[in-house]
Length: 144
Image 1 (cartoon, rainbow, N blue to C red):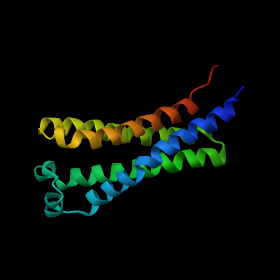
Image 2 (image 1 turned 90 degrees about the horizontal axis):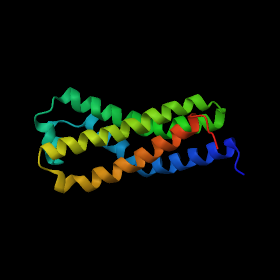
Image 3 (image 1 turned 60 degrees about the horizontal axis):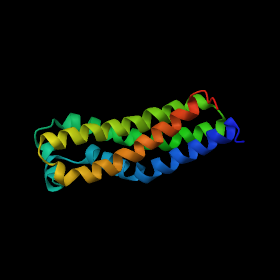
Image 4 (image 1 turned 120 degrees about the horizontal axis):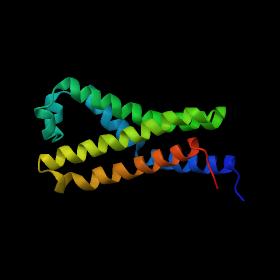
């Protein structure tokens, strides 16, 4: 029989693997949005950025970086310190990344770009959801 502690470690590791699959992509995308300018976004074919205020693009970039870092650091800190409540930050970070992808899917659908972007958005959405759920299960009282 698996103990709650062992199950918590397993779920945290599942969440970390899922987070690691996409954290670099989110981090790089966020860094680009934080440091790029309108011509750079146009060159990268970010058509949506043309009418989006630069400040909003910067906030999105910051959220992507915080989500990528938080979805990796918080669970590791929880494992090291044994403070499961820190895992809530990992839940929030991973869930935030999933919400960023939901917003991206809605934006691209509205712009008629889904046929080009849906596959990538979907590939980034699901690992964030898996991480958020795995981290959340660690925090919830486990009743088996």
